[in-house]
Image 1 (cartoon, rainbow, N blue to C red):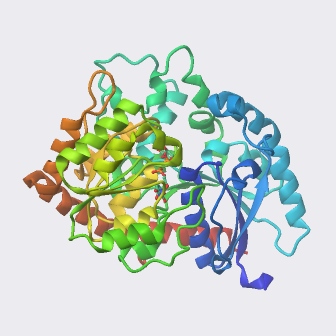
Image 2: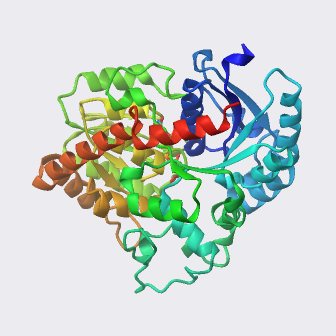
Image 3: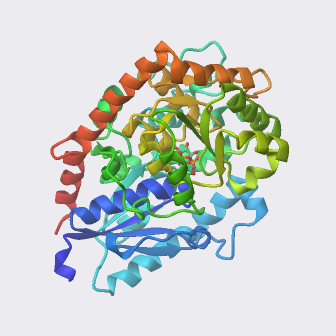
Length: 459
Ligand code: UDX
């Protein structure tokens, strides 16, 4: 059995849904290439996972401690600095113990692929003489922004009028930058540990694997490759079968903290005409105000369109009963859905999204135009690319209070589902879908990069 594998990679994921998903998919790619992949994440997170990987993927799972084995307390959930400090203290030791334990098994570890957020993993890998590969879960453009902050080339505070010009990155306005830069009272530093500090050591990593696609951002990818010759784009980490719109295997999307209601969603979609449904979802973390949620609800009602809206259980109370009743005339509200299957369904005409990188990449892979309502983090930069670079979506402009208004929702839906602009965006979305599909097909840019990585780490 052991000689079936060319190498053994630990794939160390930051404990969050948006980080686990791409790392699980990357594990599957490794397993496809006969590299044994062991997904590693924090025990506290693993305990919250509701769906598990099935054995057909050949992926093992191990946990390490983040210092909160009995569950992340409220203070640490509210304050990322507290969480990260403790994780950074106990994580390296816990990861070392895991590597030691595995070295006595039939499958000693050869390589540690680590989420760049968990940058201390590189020191651990080097201590054991292993290959260390940083895995960037966000776009090359966003990582370039973090790097330029790290170098002090991009300096805070940033004046509202400044035009941000970084090599290979499209021209940005300050509001296109990741939102944490604008947090007041030193709060931005709470995110520094995992967004900017990785650039202290990244140059020492043997590989830098970016969950992006070369064709999506070639200029900045080229710039990064010049700076870090071992940088490779390996995305999209989306199950390849979805790119063909083939019927996905029910278990294909791996690990989830929430229970998707597959049958309900898919049966509902099956009865809807082609491209008639607006899919609405804001990922695993975004929380909006009641006013924002209710305006969105009325916007959907006023647009008089079919919609499938994911309202996580923790957000449900923000929608009063009377709105839910009115919404249910044309829409379905669920607490979680099989997003890839939904986006692959021909009934879906557009996606109202927070522009999380996974959601963005999934919509691009499946040729679905977007209406962007960014919540935080890299989502603002992703939206800039969705609207102005890839031209596959609209920006839903918030008012001065940061609330999305119902007229805006309605207008955006009409424009994208019925207007000329919508047709153009759909055509562009199909163009990107095909380019992305080529990148992962035999001989495509990401396929070649993954093959190169596998060859280099193989024994
Ligand atoms: C976070 C950040 O917000 C994002 O900007 C960053 O780039 C990665 O981590 P999250 O907010 O959860 O993630 O959003 P996103 O990146 O879009 O990931 C959500 C994942 O959950 C996607 O893979 C999506 O397919 C999945 N999902 C979402 C479901 O499977 N079902 C749902 O109902 C909603």
